[in-house]
Structures are given as structure tokens and as C-alpha cells.
Length: 124
Image 1 (spheres, helix red, strand yellow):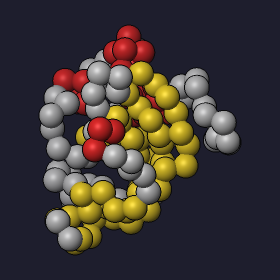
Image 2: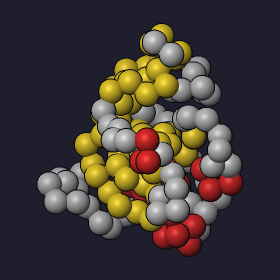
Image 3: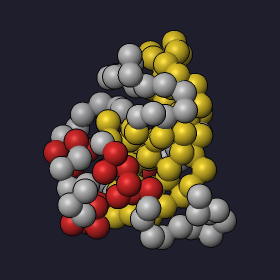
């Protein structure tokens, strides 16, 4: 199982479950992989965790993956930059890259075990 990060600019509106266009790693993303939602911008950071529910497929606009977010988190970029497990993540070094961004196991652990579960989060 792999771990991925999908970036979204919240200034462009709400995002969530459904098809997400991807430009890279089409041959590596699989159903069942973990995924994190990253909000770009000054107050950005991780906003949610979930699962790739459908592997790469053709969709209007290009290749997409199906995603379901089920664990909402608020982990600010500054907090992740201070975490030695996450500070060298590709999203921190090359934020203008296209979706998805790969996450190494330690980077995933830094966000999956983070504090701040929102109300209604099962914590699993």
C-alpha cells in the first residue's frame, strides 16, 4: 500500500470525495492506498485523510482517481515543517508540483497520528 497527498486550493471552493484528476504516478496509484488532502495557501496544511477507492481511470479532463475522505484533521503547515518526519516531504519542497504527491511511510505516520481530530472523527 502506498500513501499519497492531493493538493487543493480552498480559494477555489469546496472539495472532497469523488474523482480527482492526477497528472503523475498514474502507474503507481491503486485502490486501497492511503490519501491525505492538503490545502494550499498561507494557512494551508493537511485537512483530511482517506482512501483511494478507485484506481486511475479516464474522466472528463484527463486521468482521475476516486477518493473518499473519512478522517478530518487540521494540521498546519508550520507544525508539519517542524516535524522531522515530514519536513522533507515533496509537498514542502515542491508545492507547485501536480497531483498526487507521494508520501513516505514516516511522512504518513506524521499526519495519520496527529492530534486535532474534528468532532465526529472516529479516531481510527
